[in-house]
Structures are given as C-alpha cells and as structure tokens.
Image (cartoon, rainbow over all chains, first blue to last red):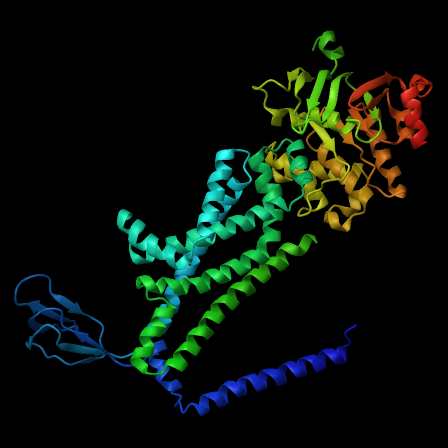
Length: 315
Length: 249
C-alpha cells in the first residue's frame, strides 16, 4: 500500500536524482572547457536582423510618388518591383547591377531551425494521415476472407518491416522518385507513410481481432452488412483499443522523419546540422533540436491521451 | 394474403446438414417447421447442435446440404439478400453482445437508423417505447458496463425488436445470468410469446418450456430426436430424453 507521505517521499527522491543528473551534465560540460553560447542560437530560430533586398537584374532605379521602387531592366523583361521596405539604399535614377542592395527591411522572420521544425511537423502530419489510410486498407485486407488480399497484405507488411527505413528512403527517392518524377518532399512523405503504414496495419489488425466475434454476429443479425458492421460496431471499439500502440507508432514517425535529411529535405535535423556549421555551437544546437522534437512528440501524446479519455466514457 | 400462405410454416428447415471443415458432423438431417405465432423450445445436452441449428436460421452458420425457407425466402439461394432476411429475424445471444461503445438507447437505435434509414427522432421514439416495455425506462442513458446481466439481456431483446422482426431466435438467453436475474428476462420473453411473436428458443429452462412452449424439441448429437407438445413431451419416456432430463433436473 502506497500512503500519501510515501508518495511525497518518492517525488522528493525523484527531484533529487534529477538534480544530480542535470548537475552532472552541467559540470561535465564545464570540465571539457567548452564555452556555451546560447545567445548565438537565437538568430537561427527567430531572425531579427534587417533583411537586405537585392537587385535581380541590371537596370535603372525608378521610385514613383507612392514610394514604390522598381527597376527598369537594361536588357528587357519585366521590371522588378519592391513595395515593402524600411530604408532605401538606392536612389531614383541609380544604375544598378545584379546583386546590388536596393533597400533594407526591418522586422523579424523565422530562422532555419524554426523553418526546419515546420518542415518536420508538415512532413510528419501528412505522413501520419497517409499511414492511417494505408494501415486501414492493409489491416482490413489482412483479415479479409479472400486469400489474395491476405497474401498481398502479408507481403507488404513483411517487406516493409523487414527492411531499414533508411534504405527505403533511398529506394523511394532514387528509384520510384526517378520513375514517377517525385520531388524530395513527396518522396519523403511516401517513404515515411509506407513505412509507418505497415506497422499501423498490424496494429489495426490486432485491434479488430481483439473485438469479440459476438459483436460482429450481433451486428449482422440485426441486418447490417459487413461494411456497416465494421464502421458502426467493430471499428469504434477497435480504435479505442489501438490508441495507445498507435500513439507510440506516431511518435516513432515523428522521430523517424529525421532520416529524410539524407535526401536533402531541410527538416529539423538537417537544419540543425547546417546551423552547427554556421554557429559553431554544436552542443546548444543539438540540445535545442532534441527539445523541439520532445515538444512535438509530447504534444501528440497529450492529444491522444485527451482522445483516449473522451472515448473511455463507456467504460 | 390467402389462407394457404397464412397457414404455411414461417420457418421450414429441410434435411439441414452441417459438417465443419475439421470433420465434425454438427447437424444430421434436421427438419423442423415453425408456424406463425408458435413458440418452439429446443433442449438438449451441450454439443448437441441446438445452438448451431438456431444459428443456421439466420445464416450466422452456413449449412452443408439441405434447405431453409424463412417466410417464403430460400436462404441457400445465392440470389437471396441475407441482410434483408436478417432484418426479419431477430436474435438474442447467450453473452448479450451489446455494443459497449453505445448507451442502452444507442444500442437499440443503431440498426433502425443505419439499416432501415429511420431518422434519429423516429428511432429514438421507438427505442424509448421498447426499453420502457422491457422495464428499462430508467436506465436508457447507461452504457452496458453499468448494467446488470439481466438488464443487458433485456436491452438486447429490445435491440432485436427494434427491427420489427417477424421471428425471434433466442440462443440460451438466460445461461449467462445470475439465478436471480433469470426471471426478469423470462418474463419479457413470456410477454412476447403472449403477443403472438414467432419464437425459437434454445434453453435449459424446463419451466419456461412447460409453461410457454407450443412445441418442445429434443436434440442430441446433431439429430432431432423428439418433437412434441410440452404435455406429451415431458411424459414421453423416451430413453435418451430421460437420460438427459435425469442429468439436468
């Protein structure tokens, strides 16, 4: 029996152990004579430096009464028009060469780490949707009455589970991507969805099979056809049972998305690598990247827990 | 409707034979007619094929050979839409099989809404009526996990009745219940029988058989051994029946 006081003792002990661990990390950081520069990280997350606006072609600057800057190109073509800027560097009538600074724009924009984080979220979310669709299709095929369906589903699951994701990403990008002319992002989404779909298929199959056969019999005895029985009786129960393993799988998906950096998608991990070479602050960058992954996965498992609570109303 | 169709049996099972893929011979040439409004009780030891036979009547079990005719529709015909037939044949299971993710009311409303395309309002009015009739007016919003076995089984009966079936099949409806709850379920079934519902009941409740049945059928080892009115049935002195009754009574 755990009493209230022994639980508080447990919490206290936990805090003590965590404090020792963290100070261990901190002091080992001190020992290796590494100078921490957390402030260097900020521009890579949110960049507040003024942004230079460059000329795209050679030409002459024209500034009209509204303040809109445009460049009449020397060699024809559409003029480059700049409407938003804070300070002008070029003057009316200036001769400009490609790459010259025209104006500066104050304000803030996202740095590479924030942009990488957004790519990771986008990539994971789209892959998650497709992996659910794939998982449902192949999970249902796996329990189909038709032998050919079962064979196809087993082949898919075994082939995908039996090969490394990294290799699959290369195959999807270099082979399938070349055949169907896919861009990097699509190839990354395809590889991640196909990979996760195989695991989701197995989870869906197990979930459906965990619903007692009497449920299907009761639904069919009431005149429902197979599809109605699946949609209204079996799946709602199966989904509830599969939520915890699905949560685990989707968290894996988010983490596995870091592997797509090998086909040059600038996700959080690749952004991290680039920022390290620019900032010379590898420790800070990698700790930050890890923390950002943790926030994304944490948000997902929190959302699934909410869903689980709502579905447990019938327990 | 002519007199002939009125008097024709609503269930006609002819030489129903079933062998499982593993070689188990579950039903051996079972033939049974049930007339409209008749209550037929099937008894027999476990493994005698009585539940299997009952489940062939709405094709939850397929049959190997023979023919089953439900209200003029031949079930073994490949052109028969079995879902349509099942709308007419309600079934109540030993283990209730209520949908755990739906309330009592939701259980009763689901199939009229999805299969008969009734509106939510229509289905709800009818469901409330049925649940009141089985004595569960107070428990409509409860999930099955909050109901006792007897209450769950009464919801299951209401759920089957919601499809307005012509025939009700009962597969050992009281076998999974605590003794004090058997009565409430049997009372609902008696009420149904009095209203003229055609019922086929597999049960071990001899009292129910004596009191309510128009005919009692004894099955053993996949064969239909005896088929009599209750008065003659329990006095028949058939040796195999006596051996069985000696074990259960």
